[in-house]
Image 1 (cartoon, rainbow, N blue to C red):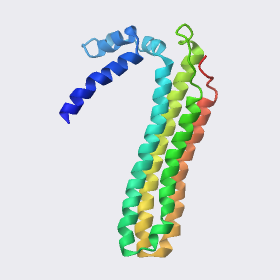
Image 2 (image 1 turned 45 degrees about the vertical axis):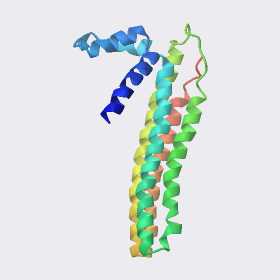
Image 3 (image 1 turned 180 degrees about the horizontal axis):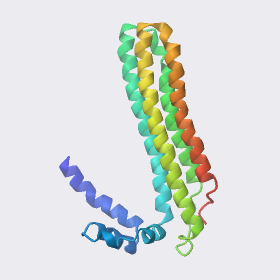
Image 4 (image 1 turned 135 degrees about the vertical axis):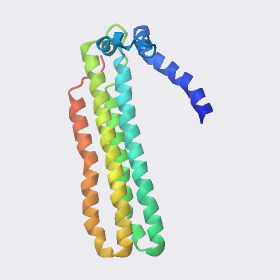
Length: 207
């Protein structure tokens, strides 16, 4: 593990250097050499490429959404398989919990495509315009909002879906009652999607 970290750190640093210009690299260098009080936050935000913020937002959107969906499917799927050994009848109708988890990843995918449509090639002269900076920050925070919402939604649906499978194996009358709770949990991801659309709706394409 330590060897892997040792090999990854230089590549990560080179990637960060490709995002930041020389001024930002000097600003970051101050933080790691005991001169953090000289770090200019305003200058850092104004001179950082909007492409970095936009791509970080898109990556957070799809990344956290997929993690939430995978985590939920892992929790629910293992319970369905385990409880299905005792009561095979539960395996079919409890697949709806898997679908709810998968929808979380679809939310992230759709929003990542919507955000990506605002990325256009821009020359370095107009890159740091106010419009482009607003778009970069909007996509970053919108993507983070959607991603984190879907991550929490996936966990909520996974836990409730797991409980629904186990309860259904014990008593089939409990399935519908727990399914209602699961539906409320799945709506959380939709809330994040709506807010993400509103946050990025006024952001213009890079120009």
